[in-house]
Each structure stands twice: as C-alpha cells, then as structure tokens.
Length: 220
Image 1 (cartoon, rainbow, N blue to C red):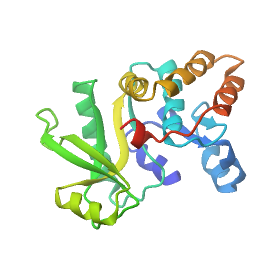
Image 2: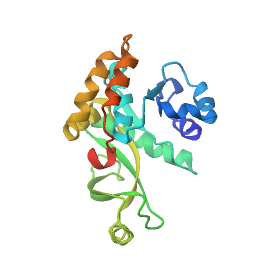
Image 3: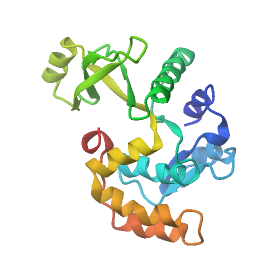
C-alpha cells in the first residue's frame, strides 16, 4: 500500500488520492501505520470486502460527489513495480488519451514473461489512432485461463491485465450502470448519503445485503 501511494504521488497530489480499505484491515498494525499519515477525508472504508467491483464503486461515489468531472487513475496495491518512473509515464500518457476523449477507458497491459493461470489477460485488437502509437483496442479478456490457454493467447500477443485504469469518473460509473445495474442501483443511497450524518449507517446497510462482484469478470 505504501509503495503504491508513493508511486502514485509521482503524478497525483496526496490530497487527491483515495485509499480504499475494508474494516477488517484495521486489525493489522502495519495498515494502521500506513494510513495514519493520509490527508483527512482520503481514506474510504468498506464495512466488508465484497470483491473488486464494490471496492471500486464505493470510492467512485465519493469522487463523483466531490469532483464529478474528474479524470481518475485506479492503482491496485498488490503490484511490485521496479521501474516506477517508466510505469508512471505510461499512466500519464493514459491520462492524455482520456483528456482528449472522455469516453475512453484506458487499461494498462504488461508483456508476460511466462504463462500464468492465476492472472487475467487482455488480447489486444487494432491500434488506436489517438493514443500516440501505443494504444490498442481490447479484443477480449480472459480471466485466469488454463495453462494451455494462457500459452495459446500469449502467442497471439496477449498481455497481463494490470487492472491499472485511467478514465473519467462519469464514464466508468456509466459502464458499471450498464454492466452491473444491480450494483449501481444499490449504491445510489450511498451517493445521496455521502456528506450527511447518515453516511456510515447507509454504507453499512447497503453492504450488509451486497453480494460479491468481480470487476474484471462483470464490468471489463
């Protein structure tokens, strides 16, 4: 988590970074230490981990309430990145694509060094004219394939899905509404309650009846 925040701060001010954790993370002293220095209002707490789609949708509600036209980057905290400056230059390039066209959702892929059935894969399609020569359309996704399938799609040029996304807040919310309308509807009371005395009670109530939803499978 700490490394992810330091990496993101190469491009984004600390007061514009939201940290998303689940309530059960507080049992770990190291987590408490790492979030203690975050600016006020920058830690979003899920009552319970309900997989990645709610974990992305909840901070989006806060962002939409505060900065509805924001351009946003999503950084999973389980990555090790050696060449951080190179990595963040690609993120910056993705921001420029989204600045030119707010309907785009840009996803970073990484060349695999071996087939691994525990990863998600992107099979890239045709090149995008507006992406400075490196952008490709997504032909399709393969989530945690068999070893045989991983080998086959890597030969077709498949990339590891980093789940590092850059997008306009409204655009990703519309994608969530289209692909997981049940999740989108259930989060509307949260959107209304943010900033009110009922905020935490409503989030607890919504999460109590929420089923886990995987973002890669259901939204991407």
